[in-house]
Image (cartoon, rainbow, N blue to C red; front, side, top):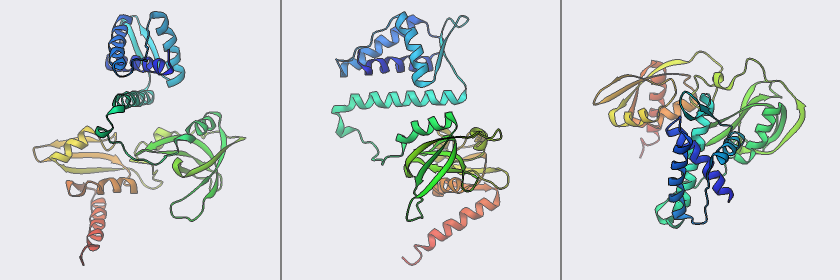
Length: 308
């Protein structure tokens, strides 16, 4: 069987268990057979076999490749994905990638009807090396290009975690020169080198806690997170409901003309940029200080066109 056949089968198992947990072998077998027929319509060389013995091997491979555990429940009389919240997000991303992969493979001869983003490299080629350094607690060195500087500078840091935000990946950890927690975008990072120097991650650092009240990649070092009330018009509100701005988002009220939300976040630069992207479709109800800041930014922007 081709490598694509194996990978397709692994991801079909994950897809089925994500849609309906506690599936018996017979249900999994039926689903894989049905999906295989569809995939073979577009690639007759693809072969996806399945048996109880194959399933047991697949479960081990899925754990090794994707870090996702699948167990059998006697009470539920079927297989299910056993994972915490972080692992659940990871498996969802795997399934999304699978759907895109298969859709684009089906669309090989449909180029006029499929348009994809023309993105530049975002540094994902460094992920494996950085994750190795994080897991083994080894200091890394690399060159980094800030947007506001002419040349790249040498960085030495203790890598603690990797974070994604808006299609960019960042390595987060303590920069040795400053001794402070900092972040570096992987797309501006070159020549990463893993040293043999060990370090210990502080017990006080936890990536999820650090970003609990942050909107994007910036960690606020001052004050406390604010309760921010946002009023969206009805149409924009539908989009914000379907794709929440932040995990703390909750609906205060909803009518035919308005959606009123509350978030608990730091009003950092990246959050302010997000609010500005909504233009006239959002009004900051509170706090007043944030509303005034947004208002002043809009005034300055308007002044650029006052003489036009």
